[in-house]
Image (cartoon, rainbow, N blue to C red; front, side, top):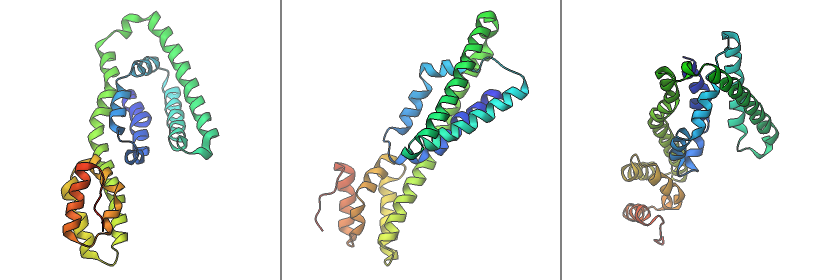
Length: 216
């Protein structure tokens, strides 16, 4: 339960709040997988090995959750550098303190550390994160599609049928490919086309070459 709570507030919610980065970063999900396979995961597990009484554990979860959220919201905001540094400092101090206490505990009670239950606990967070990625992918794909279609509908606000045609064609060609949707969203100018045949040709050209060259 403790590991699950830490994963929800320390990993899942952070990923959820940073989901808007999916449109900007091409290797967003590869980065998540790499982060879960790093040595840092083992260090974090060791840091969480030492258990305190229930009151301290609850306070710790609240502190981690609060400063993790602050860090996530201020990470890419140049006007919130002070808040970001403060949250990172608090999290670092807490992490180092937990690591020191845990290492001391492991040295004194190594037999209690090297168990199957602890191995399961170590693997819990990476497995949860990997299983969480399909949901994040679909949600991110929906968000990118939604932003793209809002722009298209705005361009063709007086031509509802043409707008619906463009949306259907993009859905048909891109389907579940986030990469293709990103490529299409960068070539928004093709949505200005009024000729359906030219539009179909332009979509195919963009998805093959990565850019649109037809003059209109």
